[in-house]
Image (tube, rainbow, N blue to C red; front, side, top):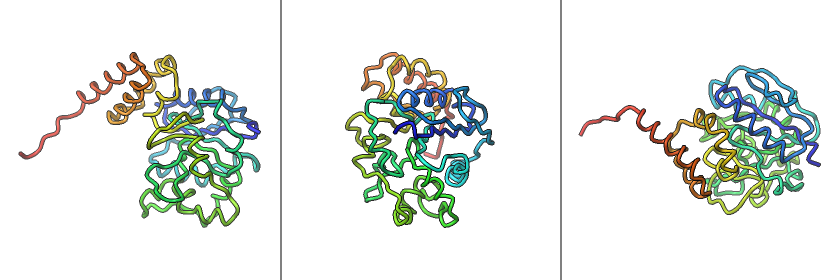
Length: 262
C-alpha cells in the first residue's frame, strides 16, 4: 500500500536545499513512493517532478500555496506525504498501514487540550481527496484568529468539523503519536518527526555530522540550538554536541548588546 503515496516537498529557500534533499532521501528509505513532486527554486536530481516557484515571502504565503495551489499536480487517488528539511520519515520499521486509513495524520499538538489536537503539517500524510477538497472556496485561512493563518490549523481545527461532515477522517491522538513527534513529552520512537530541535533523536551522529554545515547555516536561533543540544546530549553525541555549543556561543557573541534604562 505504501507505493500509493506521493512524496511531496515545498522549499523555496536556497539555504535549506541540501537539507531538504537529505530529508527526501531519508524518507525514500522508509516508503516506496509512487512519485516525487518538488516545488522550489531548483531541482534535487532524485527523479522528481519539479515545479519552479518563487520564494515565499512569509509563512502566510506558504500556507496559502499549500492550502489552495497543490491539488492540480496530484493524482486523484492515494495519499501525499509532505516533508520539510526539518520534518521527515526516519524509522522504516515503525510504518503502519493504519496511517493510510485516515485522510490526515500529523504529530499531535501538545498545546491543544481538546479533541482537535492532531494535525501538525510539518511532516504529515494527507489523502489527495482531502487536499483537493481544500480548494473549496468555503475553506480559507483566518489571520484574525490565533494561528488561523496556518494551513494545518485551518484544516485540522477551524474546518475539521466541516471536513468530517463530508466523510473525511482524521487520526486520533494515539495513532498520530505513533506517526510523528513534534512537541511535548517524548515517550518513544515514532515513524517520523518535525522541528529542528528533534533531529538528533532521529539520526545517527555520523549523519548529523555529515549535514552539520548546512544545518548550522540554516538554524540561527540560539534557543532552538539549545533544545537541539539537549537532544544531542541525551543521545550521547559528544562531537555533535560540541559543534552545537560552539554555534550557540558564536551566535550570542555576534548579537548586539541590549541596553536599557537602569
